[in-house]
Image 1: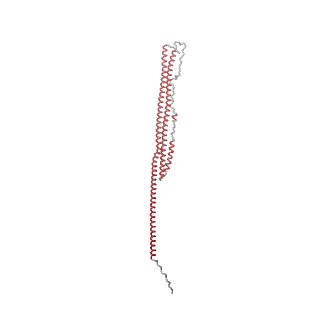
Image 2: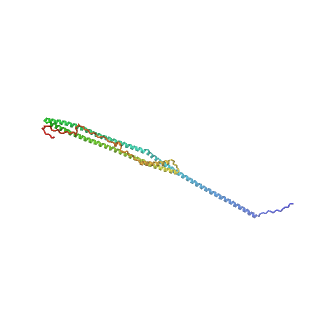
Image 3: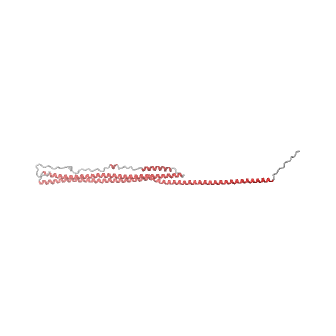
Length: 349
């Protein structure tokens, strides 16, 4: 038969220990719960702080973006304004280009045409004046020839009449041959003296007429030359003013193109593209200044007095011809010798 072994009775904890353990467990539980709650509170605080900072940063970034956008808009507006100013200057540039291409030249051509017209009128007046004065001299020469011819005929008639009268008186008084011959010679001498005076007057008058023609030719040539020189001086003045205006206008155009290029540069800096206009403005500026310097150095090429005026001789002198018979002032009639045996009256030799 089996033996039944006795069992050790169970030990039970006293009540105070149980209560103490229970109290400690509760305290530990409270501590753990309080730690958990405090950790939760700190994490919530950290998360709220972090979200507020993010909002501040986002607001700052947004404000910065708005400021950048406003700055870009301001720059763009300024760039557009610069470009509009450049476009406004284009109107002035076009006006100057029109003046340089057509207006100045038309004015110059009109002024040159007026000077040429006045020159032609003055030259025609001088030529007509020369022709009128020449006709006066020619008329004076013709009148002198007519007067000389009439005087020659008159002196010849007087000689015939005087000789016939003297011969009639001598014959009625019974004079000899010597007296008759002396009477005839006396009439011839009177004719010779009158004819010589007429010829001398004719040649003096013709000499004065021809000298007047020479002076007329010289004065007319001098007047033609002076008129031509004056006209060329007026043309030179017109061309000089034309070149000066062209030079000044090209300088103004270059300045305008330079301002345009500056405006386009500023517009580009503000973010507004100017494209090819800026390059064109700079190229035109350089070209305008070069042309201004070229026109500043130009001058009118004065051709001087025309060749036809230099070779102008005017009218030739009038030929002096004898209008009487071939017995001229150089003809001298010597006194006759006494007849042999004649002693009726003594004549002075």
